[in-house]
Structures are given as C-alpha cells and as structure tokens.
Image 1 (cartoon, rainbow, N blue to C red):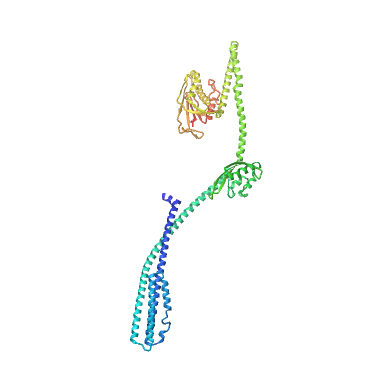
Image 2: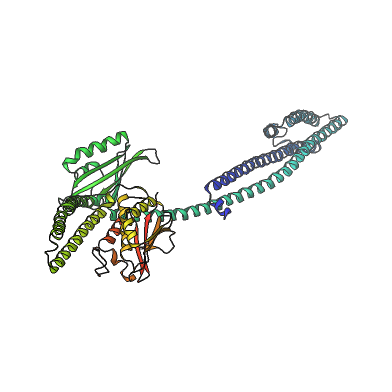
Length: 597
C-alpha cells in the first residue's frame, strides 16, 4: 500500500523521471562520443587504405617505367617509350592525394616528402639510363652498371614504400581493433539507450494512463458536483456569478438567470443587462456599492428589489467577495439569493408578533383584573358573610346557615381558582423572565418553612437530600416545589402520616421524552416521592392538563390548575416532568432540568 502511494505520488514520479532523463542524457552523450570515435576510426581506416592504394599506384608506375626501359634497350622498339613515358603528372597527382590524406599526421608528411625526393632521383636515373640506351656507341659495361644502380634504387624505394605501407597497415589493424571495441560499446550504449527510453516511455504511459483515469474520475465528480450544485441552487433559490476586474467579463450561473424570471443565457452576462431589472429606487445604491467594490476590492452585501417582465417584484440578497484566479487576476465572486418568500414571511411574522403583543397586553390586563378587580367582590362577599354570621348567628335559621356555608365555600373555591389562574399565566410568561443561578437546597428550605403549618397539621415527614444548583427563575421554581409538596400533603391516605422525599438521582440510559434521549451529562433529575393515595398510571399525562382533576371527592379540594402550572414552569426552563403512580402506594414526580453550562 505504501509503495502504491509512493508510485502515485507526483513528487516521486518527477524525481524518478528527472533521474531517468539524466541517465538517458548521460548514455546519449556517451553514445554520441562513441559515434564520433567510430566516425574517426572509419575516417582513419579509409585514409590509411587510400594512402596504401596511392603508394601502390606510385610503385606500379615506377615498376612499369623500369620494365619499359629494359624492353626498349633489348628490342629498340619505340613503342615502349610511348604512353606518357617518364611523365610526372600522374605521380604528382598521387603525391598530392597522399598529402591530403596524411595532412593530420606530421611523421607521414615527412615520409612523403622523402618519397618525393626519391622519386625525383629515380626519374633522373631513368633519364640517364635512357640516354645510354639511345646512344649509338653504347658502353655495355657502363649501361649494365646504370641498370644495376637503377634496379637497386628501385628496390630501395620499394622497401621505403612498403615500410610506409606496412606502417599504415599496422595502423589500419589498430584502427580496426579500436573500431570493433567502439562498435561493441556503441551497440551496448544504443541498447541501454533504447531500453531506458522504452522504460521511460512505459512509465510515462502508465502514469499518463493513471492520471487520465484520475482526471476522468475527478471530472466525473466535478460534473456531479456541478449538477448537484445547480440543483441545490434551483431548490434553494440561489444563483452565483463572477466578474473579472481585469477583463470586465461577467459570468452567470443558469439559476442566476432564473432569479430574474428568464431562461439560462437569455441575455449577455453584463451588469447593464442586470440593471434593467433592478427597481429604480434601488438602482443607484446597487450601482455605487458594486462599482465601488470593484475598485476597493471590499466585500459587499447588497439587498435590493428587482421587477420581472411580468411585473412581479422580488427581493434579492447578493453577497460578493474577491479572490485571485490562476493567472493572478482579481475576480469578484458572489451569490445571490431570492429573499421574496422570506421577506413575505417576515412581514407576516411581524404582523403576528404585533397581534401576539396585543394578546399579551390583554392577558396582562386580564391578570390585573383577576388579581384585583375579580377578587375584590369575592373578598366583600366573604367579609359580609362573616359579619352576618358573627352578628346574626342566633337569628339565622339552620337552613340559612347551611346556605351561607355553601356560599363561603364557593367563594373560597372561586378565589383559589383565580389565584391559580394568575399563577398559571405567570408560568406561561416564565421564559421571558431573567434566569439566574439557584441553589435548590435553599429553595426547598424556604418552601418547607412557608408550609410548616400545613406540614405540622398533617404530621408529615419530609426529607431532602443534597440538591444541585440550576439556572432558573427563583419564584417559579419555588412555586413548582410548593405545588408538588402541597399536592402530596393533600392527597394523603387516611390515618397514615404523609412521607415525602426530595432527592437528586442519576439518569438511566432509557429516559426518553418526545423521541429525545435524556442524558445524565445534560440534565439533573429531581425526584419528589410520596406515600399518598396515588392514581392509575394511565392518567399520568392527563394530570398535567389544565382543569383536569382525577379526584372528585369533596374532601380533596382543588382547581385542576396546580400540576398544569408545574408543567408550564418546567417547560419554560427547557426541562421535562413525568409522574409514576400506583393506587394506594404513592406517586413519584421526576423533574429533569438542564445543567448549568
């Protein structure tokens, strides 16, 4: 796997390619030098061979002249003296050719000069012998001596020439041997050069093939991303654009055209064509912002209106920033978003907020009415009933006393209901209150102190463990605990003192509310447990609904609002509450409140 990664690494391939090119270059230079040596060897062999040939020609001419001279002397036939006899022109041409061939060899040049001198002397002997042969009074002894001298000189000249020829032959042999070595080395170099070239070609082809496959894969992915991005643009109502600050050329995406209610490429991508759609009241602002940014290269966020061909008005939010392309040119790239639906929903939301504000004001007014105006007549009713009973108790009939008692009970119940409704409305508004760090131990102690008379009256036993600190609204958390403890005191079993415990427990792994898993590191679990009359578990959710009471027995007073208030308080603190109960066993309320961050 590591080798495969190294092979696919562009840097490794570049290094390998550079090394291969250097090696090929070195072998090519060696091969070039060997080719030059081969050329030089061939040239030397050719020169030596031609030099031998020219020397052989000279010897042949000298020998022919000598034979002709002897033939003339014996036969006196003038035919032997014809055909350019004793002419130096042909031999001089041979000497000239030899000098050209041995121009780069100083020692041979000296030998050729010496040979030329010998030829001159030989021709002098030819002439002297010819004169003796043509004389009418030929001295045979003198002629024979001249012939002998001439033959000896010819032999000496032949020895000199053959010595030179043998020297050139030895050179040819040495050159041939060197030529064979150079040829063999050249073949090896050529083979290595071809082999390395093929290797580089194969590696390059394979790398190119891998790159082509990767490029095709990348192009396919880019094509897929482009199509996905185009679809995403269309779905989300986006369109992108760019402008080259150097060339001034604009580019629009297909969906950018659609934002303006036209098909892709419906017009040339220029700012002037876009300006035709911009609302007249926004055109100057858009023009200054966009054109100014092309000079300062500052990012822009522009919101403007456009008017489509059908008269529809759209709200466009356009964000642009600057970057550089591969040529180093500054390009502004931007995204435009159709905010029309968001704008309409914002307007609708503002209208709803205004209506909600009015409703809240009316609710606040209702709370004031409930708190003061509605309770005032009840207090007067209760006050006058008390006066009637105190001042006219003896004159009132038994039936009248019963009626007055029922009126007092109903008035008290009505007053409790009004108080609970005020508390419930305050619980609804709880999320608007400022939250602070609350120590639950302090709140529990305060609640137990406030309810001390109720607790003593019921002979209740209440225990509280160590509780955590939470982030909440103090008076609401106090109201929550009051309602739950009062509820436990109220619904106790006859002749059984209430036992109430308040503790913190760890959260299990199966606590789920509304498909959300409740985790111990996010929430505190506060458990309030009693030994009261309990209820059937099927009513565990109904008890938190406003005005829902499970007990209709007159000895259990209540309005059906207390637990609904508890639910609203916990909801406003982003928590959860649930109840687990069993008839004649008791009820356990579990409260889950967020931990302090």
